[in-house]
Length: 462
Image 1 (spheres, rainbow, N blue to C red):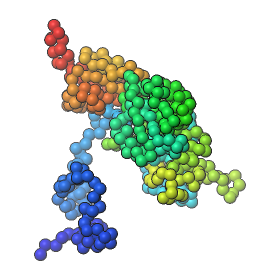
Image 2 (image 1 turned 90 degrees about the vertical axis):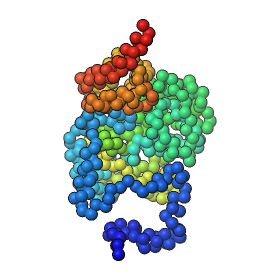
Image 3 (image 1 turned 30 degrees about the horizontal axis):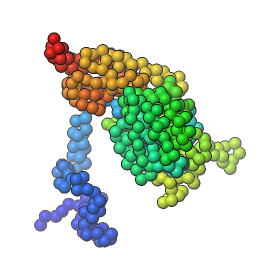
Image 4 (image 1 turned 90 degrees about the horizontal axis):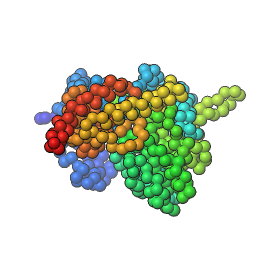
């Protein structure tokens, strides 16, 4: 008789246990739980899994084999960006966040805090200074969620239901934000001009039903929006809120959205001391002015200074806890679950190390190297820049050959030249870890890849 092996810690795979669980919820089969999933999204075949591994060392060997297939951006020359960036992470950042009181602390209260609340308070303070805002949350899952929350906040604040999308947004971000907000507000795209917002088109689209104008800067292609003040003035005149999705990495040198009239500033902190890690550790920030109507719409946890029973002593605790879903439960305005608090501590350490002067130097380096890369690539016959906007870190180039072919050719030389965003369009990312000689190497390799096509075209013209 063949006996089925049942892992002692996964008992629901046993037929008897599964039957008991189905009976408890009055279901005839597991398929009933997936009735709402369209057939086109179902796998309808067994998962491609290896044969059962009965020993831990066998599992470890199998996983090492899978990981060995990966190549990190430290092993290859990488110009990949599009939401996850290869910035330098100082060694002390990893040292601090790997401390046990931070690394393993999922949740807690002041009496068992071990400094985590204080570290997050300091992160919030540093972010607020960088963004020229007053109130910043403990990080949520990622920048996508943070921006979606900022937009739903605008709907609640105004009682309106339409959001004007004024900038080019990364397709993945736009998809997630739309999925998050669709039950509350409608996203309406306003076509851009030269990869930046069309101010007149935004003005024309404003109306009494517009809750907010969503501006993304840098945009999906790294373009810096220069007309935030004009858009903000028009939006405010129409009673709408201005929500800006951004990356904080450039605000040591760029004017902040807050200084141009933004009401809610959101984004991701991955650039601030967090590795790419095959997709990145991400954390989303939401920043507002110190206005109760905005602060009380924030669903995320906030930490502030709190007095104690001992004169002269203070601690760190929740601010306006009664506005959160932790307090309201099912009556909450928006649910907030697990926070990306560890990444907030990482970003706090990074900002403390850099300081205002360091962030200014970094911003200048990013602007300069981005421009140098644009000039070097645009000098290649047949290659042109996709727009004339000012760019930070990323920019798009139009190629005379399919972008996928260019990627394949350069990848064979150990270069990841960028992300394909169109048939002949490549999104190139330059950070401070990319040197001038790295950019020159990319330019030489790309020129060699496109030269046969350019030469053929010139021959036909002759």
